[in-house]
Amino acid sequence: MNSKSKGNIAEKKAKEYLLNKKFRIVETNFYCKGGEIDIIAYKNDVIHFIEVKSGNSFEPIYNITRTKLNRIIKCAYFYLQKHKINLDFCIDAIIIKNNQIEFIENLTL
Image (tube, rainbow, N blue to C red; front, top):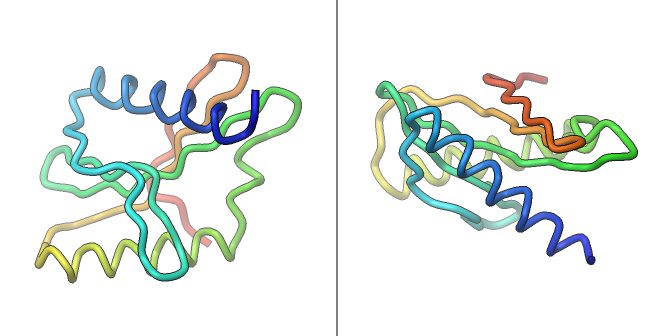
């Protein structure tokens, strides 16, 4: 199975997890110049920009580098401006390893 297929499976699991936690999925795979946001979700008046990482033989969280996080932040600001949204937001990650899901809210540098 190639990495794109594995990524699609991980994103599907992440969306199911979020829906079970009462998030509303607003958009998936939002592209902007220089980056992408895997999942944009909404809950309790907060917009969540979520990066999904998965793997079994390593710690997937380490694939969210400073550069990657900066790209997500730029895309998040672009998304908010494009849609004229003035709500609180945070950058989150969903990590899937060995079929276990970990939701990490409010990533920072």
